[in-house]
Image (cartoon, helix red, strand yellow):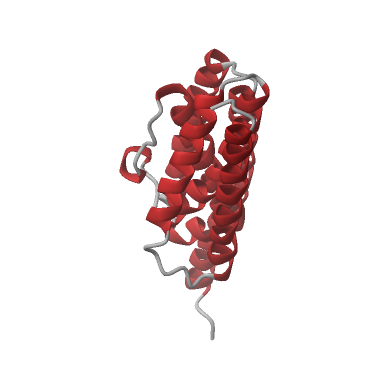
Length: 193
């Protein structure tokens, strides 16, 4: 009645997908952890350590990308989406603080959606860095961050975010910019800039 060979092939395919799914989830956790370590190192102004971690995360990203080549369905795993969004945020943050540049999505080899999620989250980290700069008397850097977040916000306004998660995250950029504008105003009123 049933073709046993066909069922054995399906079982093998099913088990292979499941095994690869578990690997993607594990590797995604590794990327997530490294992303957080990069951000923390940059917040502490330890760019040397952050640079070492960037090299590690690139290796881990390549490993997970290799696993995903087995099935395009693996890209839709939630843990992977979150990890790559965090990866983008960490890499953008590192490069902005180190070089005052924001790498492109093509240079990071990520999808537009992953890039935009990371870019949106970047504004929160930049806001925290601006507060740190203000506390350390680096007032011109605060203004530079405000200008960068304003530019990011302006660029993101050109997108029609229909995805509710993306829309909600995008709304946070407006609040991050408002906080930075208030911080710059406060510094101006106090004669710091």
